Length: 241
Image 1 (tube, one colour):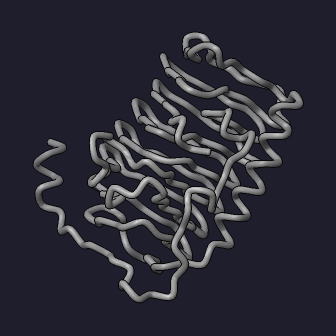
Image 2: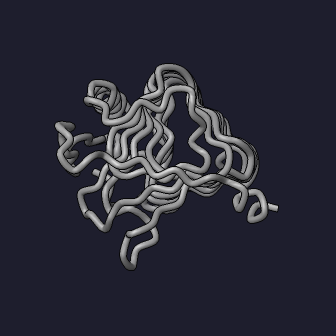
């Protein structure tokens, strides 16, 4: 079903003109600092249902008292749970810094009103004045650039449909971009069931990751809301600084 649906998508390639005055992004344009130690960070609570598997980062809350559902959820060692300790509080501060930096980046393309499904994008800064949706497949083309960054500025909510996915091309032997992907979300984020997401969600409000959805080479980081999980897989990349 997934493959037949994707074949009907129109692929649109958005390219920054060769002589564009838009600044080239570097690997150090957006950094998470201590927030990079977390695969999941909530402002209030983390609530898991089912056998969620977290690899490559801690699960924490910066101000809330509860992390529930671990077990049956698992966090691969040496990472652990942290509830409002000094490490989580510093991560919240660094998350806020990264969020503000991503929000302030000069845009290269305005995608307001467009669905991300079916698009092929080059590295750059992509803005949505309101909400952003992904139904189908989004392709990120890093052009084999080790410093490639994709930054998405979402004014309100980020919503991905069931079975949606993000893939990369031109990454050499690696299956994923060698730089980083950031989703700065002014409201809440919802990842649909069975979706395959990629990148770091920096959300002001809550993050709802629905049943069997995955995040590859990224994290779910909420400044002030909660994070809900349901039999998910979240893996972080050591390339994201």
